[in-house]
Amino acid sequence: MNLSNLLSYDNIVIQSHDAPDADSIASGFALLKYIESKGGKARLVYGGRDRINKPNLKLMVELLDIPIEYVETLPPPALLITVDCQYGAGNVTRFEADTVAVFDHHWPEIAETENTVIRPALGSCATLIWDVMREAGYDFSSDPKVYNALYYGLFSDTNHFAEIRHPLDHDLAEFMPVDLGVMKRLKHSALSMEELAVVSHSLSSPRIIGNMGLFHTEPCDPNILGFSSDIARQVDQFAYCIVYCHLPAGLKLSIRSTSREVMANELAAFLTREAGSGGGGIEKAGAYLSYAGIEKVAPGMSPDAYLKKQIHQYQENYDLVDCEHHNLDFSTAGRFVKLKHPAGFARSTEIFPENTHICVRTLEGDIDMVASANIYIMIGIENEVYSIEREKFEREYDVTEEKYVPAAPYLPSVIEVMKGRRVSLLPFAHTCVPRKEKAIRAMPLLRDTKVLTRWDKEKYFLGRIGDYLAVPEQAYNDVYVISRRIFPRIYAPQPG
Ligand SMILES: [Mn+2]
Image (cartoon, rainbow, N blue to C red; front, side, top):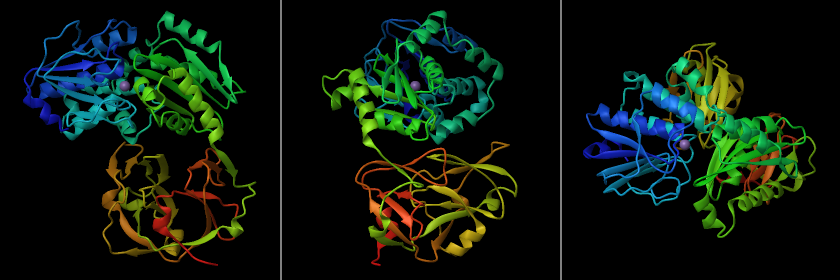
């Protein structure tokens, strides 16, 4: 949906979910300001049992002049827009309206229409609203309160940015300088005395499943989950831990890992793959499991039981291959050669001057490097990015005249770390093809497998059933994973 479509209605109401949080308030407020900037008018409301009561939210509303109203009834508007929630879901009071639009970042519970924008990959609804407003050409410098609100919405929904999961989330966090005075006041008023009691109570009774600690808290602000899991992760006997609570429409989880063999973001994705969404970094991640989603895949099962089932499945699901000590026999595995498939590359100094600290923002995370005549940026077949030394590049690839066309939708951007200036990689990308056919040995995986490689001591690479475990010929310890989607496109079997 294009934001400008909203402007054709004259009676618009924007609705946050019941017991609104910072993300929902921020999203509604920004959208309201967008409509007003175009000469339109709208109201921002919420319903449900409870009024906004938390100290940080009251302060947010006051400091940023957010005209949010509590309503028990609502005369049907021409257009009702729910933000950070989906019309008809359990966490939002249902008001009648002629037309309904939805902006949300939770797991989709309603059928998609031309009026729904649901992007579970994003860490906050604020990110989504920011992105669509930016696309619509909204001038954020015209009202810092809008940007400050969105920033705080993202901050709150991602546990102080620790559970950020998408490049766009990072982009919002860095987009414009926030009012540090306002943020300081908001950050330090997030807990009430009652909630402090919730934290201590929840941490006193973990359930231990294998080498993980599972903590259940009373319904509470998501920030408290993050705060609690940060404490729990420091217990030596847990390789990882989860703190979760029941929210009106689903379970909210905060995940922490201290082990190389468990990546928090990957665990979050595993637990929620059927009925929710989740992500973050390798040590800290957040996740959400929707009750409606659980009911669909496991009818009659309680959400708590479902979560435990998923955790058990996770623990039983994986093989582990440590490249230093594995006993896989690659000598009998299939032999393949890498085809001369075109790839992309960019010379780092064409993008930023020599010695500039840059960060390439990819779907898998940020990659830091320093621009140098010796450093090129390679762009693989799924837009995966890595740096390569010029000498090695020239040995292995030929540059061609062909125009570079990205093979996957999200092409990374490059950020100048000091100044925050951000450019797309696309205009700087050229095409190259591998010079020699490189031979490898590879075998398809029969179970999901975590591979501890030689060149990353912090995390593992995840291979799924059907992906390939590969080694260069004659270097059987250099194990890596090639995705089943890419493999047949860039490798061909060759006897020998
Ligand atoms: Mn949210």
